[in-house]
Length: 446
Figure 1 (cartoon, rainbow, N blue to C red):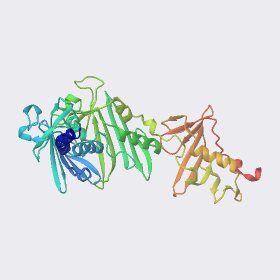
Figure 2 (cartoon, rainbow, N blue to C red):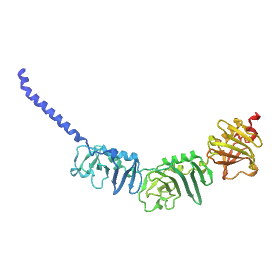
Figure 3 (cartoon, one colour):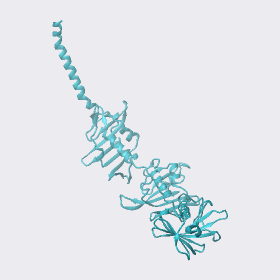
């Protein structure tokens, strides 16, 4: 038995050495089985040039944002840009081979989609060809001339998808707190609709179709909703005939003026919306006035862009916070002073004509402040209060030094009418507590 073992030992050593050599070779080949195509520092890339179908799109990092700079200037989608850069940085090939040895069926030719990225110390250009039977895609590094079947993500983004998806799809880029004017114009047959809003000294006002104090919150909600709107995809990047999209004479125009932080200037963003075109009724196309691309619009976008003007009107009587009111002069219908309510540090005083000032009863004061500042109109009329319905006038002084002159009335059903000087009268239910008689505030009567 020992002689047999001694005879086998040399063969066992040889077998072990062969196995160790095979394992070493396997381990040395594993990197080539999944080779990184290019070392790309995602966070340092500042330029992207994407080519597909004879078209080139150029994107450049501007500060913390990305902009498409060719074929025209417009913001890019930061999420889409990041997804492309990550896909390029993680692109790997199995069994990398020289590009000239790759079969023609791989589609890695001059017409294949490609992306070049540039960073301060280098660049890389990747090309994407056809799909591979193994569920992969043919990809190549055009700088090192190495290629092979590998990561499918770039194929999904550039072959199945389109580089135009790297653009931002928002209809308005700056709509929001930095906006100070909104104009909505729409033509429907012979009828023309226009809604115009403008911000003055921190407050919004409706200019068209009537002049009225606007609800700051309602305007802010509109601007925020508009800022979220996106188009449904570019349909023509260089239209030769805008009439095909109903845009030769736009059916509607929406303009929003805002501060452009990148330029340090106030600029208008203008959206043009087409009428019925060859695509048929119900299909709407739009374009930005400063860009050639035509895109399709969702129905949801259209309903958001055209709210009724009444939706913007402030339904409260004064549109201020009670803390802003410093005094209220109670007057007869002919504006003759009857009494004056004035705020001090902790309470209110009342000065009735020909009588010394004294502390006011706080219950009716609170009711009056609540009516003036928080009551909501149940109706509105675009006319002044008829003289025979006027019951009183108020001069309300504010902490900023301004004064609001208010006319109050009552209709035959007991509803309150309030007009602050414009051509809009707000109507309030008869249930609103509206103390306006000076005697009601006299605490000495209690």
